Length: 503
Image 1 (tube, helix red, strand yellow):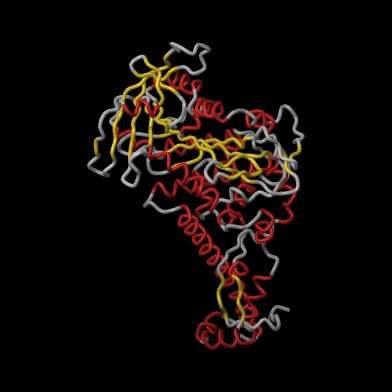
Image 2 (image 1 turned 45 degrees about the vertical axis):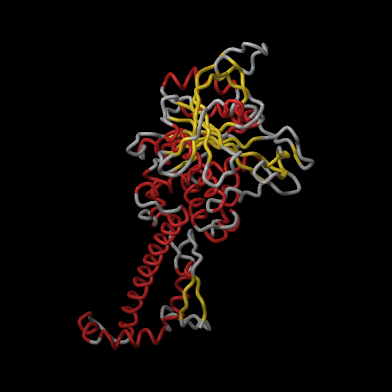
């Protein structure tokens, strides 16, 4: 008894997969139109939508690399086309991703509270290898360790249920690695523009991301980020451009030397804590809290005294049940009308971007690209973020399933479809051969065949060796393989010889 992998029995053409979920998702999100608007067009060879489709299949099947995916899909003849597509510095994947995010946000709006959130956070993008473009050394403050690679700064949109990527920068650090090399890109390419932005401070990039999202008419009520993004320039932008539009900032605050103004006196956050009064307790979660209204001052002012005020904010102090007496968290809100419980509830939505980043790393191949080209890494991450948005549409429609479960269901759906297609093809071939066999045995009309059908079929199957016939059919070159599966089935199949009655 031999094991025959299901992908050996499931060879189909890509145009036969028009009823699968992947094709339906790409149709629903108008990927062809968005690709054209992003100037991602066919210059020669394969259409971009076809390459995108094959890459989606590779992601769904969790291939360890693009090369492995091409081997499984038997698309090696398009190897150079796919690699050129992934490393092309002229393709505007940022615009494509923003259009997908806008379409998603319009289709899957906020819940009953009508709140939507624009969240900004960063994550390490480690890169190993002998050479790489713009490799830098960074400090990972979560693990308190150094690493070589990039810092991926993400912006995301959340409707309170699902968080999707909107934009990102693969940040280039000031401390270049020994293995770093300079990329050779023309000045008018899209990737060259991204490289210039990637060298900026992430505090400045966060403001640029908000501006870009608003320029693409992405709607949200709150901006959420942690304490790393707090500075005078960001606060000025929030109070001058967002607060008048009823868009507010909620952020974490460090217990640092940064000062705020309370009663016309500049004080640190831990000093303001003493003036905030006694602790109160939330009935729902037993969290202790207290707050005070403060003025955010312009720290960029040259004057050390009487610095100008940017705007008012509510500084909230929270002590959670498992924290010690001298420990507490500080959250700042530019909307001073919100209660402490509402501020904590809204800021808790920031955790959704952590889940999104984990999904991208664990299930969507965020760290999969082994290319040394900066353009290839940016394009690769952009494409996987686009796939994540499409998969999230399935997540938002139904029950709260994880991305892993959704990817499993999509993969299982394609497996069933392809198995049905293979069985149909096998039925057609064997039916034709049965009729030819019957003619050779002297059966001249269908009525005679029907009257002795069972016996005729038994003789036919025993004469051709049905197990060998299945092996022969899936080994034929009648179609290229474009899909593969990880599961296998057991069949009592003898592969000693191939036999056919068709001479």
